[in-house]
Image (cartoon, rainbow, N blue to C red; front, side):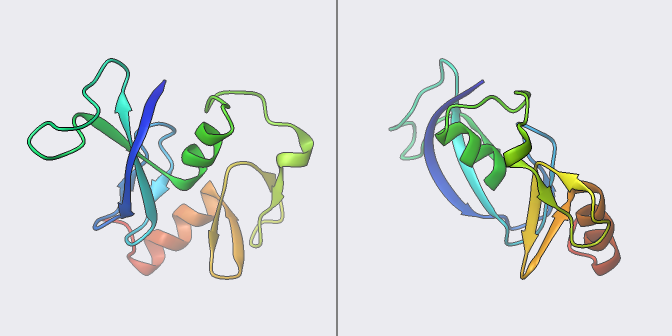
Length: 113
């Protein structure tokens, strides 16, 4: 469970979301949340201990929805590559991609480390 939202930045290297495990590409927007029970501010001038999460997890946290919550039909998006309905998705430029297609295209273009 995520704590309080404390910071945001762009990813300097590829990796995975600490909350849902989704692949995060270089320069994707990421958000820091405190761990439950962790210090929020003032530790060495930083934001204290926490986890970095993807845009999808940040949006769901703002809406108060857990990452493993049931997804309703209105929350589904059509993948631009495979045309399957999916949630979560990654929006890259004008394309909406499911995790599988995003992972494949990221590996092919070398965006993930």
